[in-house]
Image 1 (spheres, rainbow over the protein chains, first blue to last red):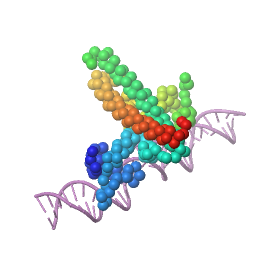
Image 2: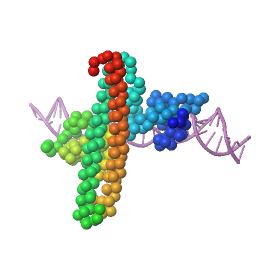
Image 3: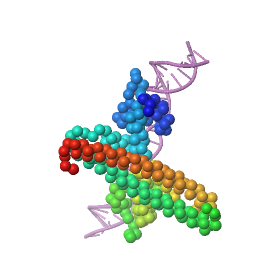
Image 4: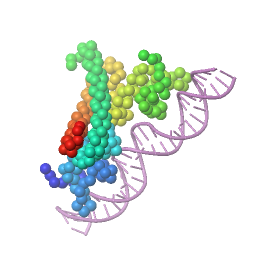
Length: 128
Length: 128
DNA sequence: CATGGCGTTTACGTAAAAGTCAAATATCCT
DNA sequence: AGGATATTTGACTTTTACGTAAACGCCATG
């Protein structure tokens, strides 16, 4: 496990621009270390970036991603905070479950469409 | 099954604005009928809207949604077109599968976070 | 030593997806 | 018919998530 990654290494790995990574830092999603002015990304930063990218692919906004990232941090020490945190987690999970339903339905409709295409090909006597 | 829905009925049902529905029409995603200038949404339009909303929740852009909607239409009659269509369907399905992986991973991380919270509560002697 | 490559900040630009507002019609109800 | 209510079109604005350009620092290599 490497100690540090440079900004361009991460851009290459994740297929995003340096602008994007700096933007995520401005937005408080990541806090890479510094040597002088130069950013040094630790493995934990890299993992965070991976989580951000995942959230983005799932259609979450930066603010929603920020909320999700908060959750991954150390659990709070106080009982009230802990209960609140659990509530927030449940909320997010509900959103994810909704997305999963959307996903399954969409996949199913695509399956149907493909089957219709294949049937049509068979009708036309094309070997599949 | 109703014959027609008014624009405001659909906005209420789906929690979107009239502007949004007109925008989708401008973008060629839906083609509601008209009586005079007034839009009349048929059940098929309503179903399309449902599919659009689903796509939006999954983080697809309007253009991607447009492509997906094309797929739901009648399969083409010509062999080349059919094979092309099947390729496009497979592409979309790959994107959806990627999203599903992202989804499972994110849900799992949330599960872990929740478990950590619960454990912490147990440590503190709180009855869950 | 200057050239290239990678890094930085600051500032302005932009595309997508609507939101908002106004003014003009349409439709519905009595 | 007439007033209330609903719709339409069009123009302008906003938000999000970056893109892009300018201007400069650091350092290794020919």
